[in-house]
Amino acid sequence: MGNVTFSSPLMPKDLTVYAVAGDTHTLLKVAKQHKIPLPFECEDGECGSCVIEVQELSDKPFMAQSLTEKERATLLAAGKLTKAQIEDAVVNDRPPPFRLACQFIVRHEDILVKFSGEPGVV
Ligand code: FES
Image (cartoon, rainbow, N blue to C red; front, side, top):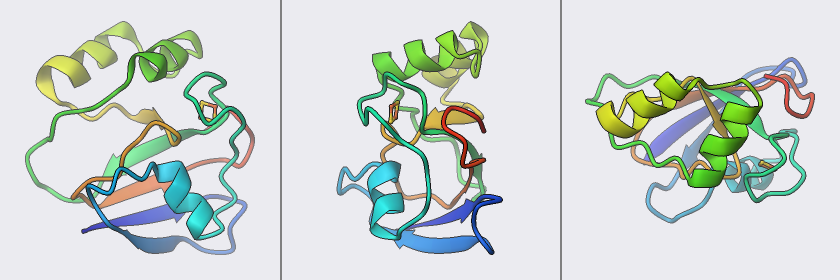
C-alpha cells in the first residue's frame, strides 16, 4: 500500500520496497525484512540511533502524524526537530523532516527514507 525507498551511502543503489500499510510494522521492521543496513540499538525510541530523514513522495493531503512521546523527546534532545516542528506535526499534520525508524509506522503513502549508516547521524 506504500512504497518505501531507502537511500544511503551504505547501499550500492536506492531500494524501493512495498510496505503493507496498517499492519503496525515499524519502518525499522520493514528495513530489517529487506536487509537494509539501517542502524538501531534500543528499538524503543530512546537511543536515537535509528534517526532517518523522511520525504513524502505522494502529493496526497497530509495525514495525522503519529509521533510518540518518546520519539518527540528523543528527536528534540538530539536537536533533529525543533519544538515548532513538533507542534506543526501535531497540530497541522505537517510531516517532520526527521523521524525514528523504530517508532514510525508505515502507512498508505510513498516515502523516501535517507540515512547515513552512522547511528544517530542522518
Ligand atoms: S533504535 Fe533506539 S531510538 Fe530507534
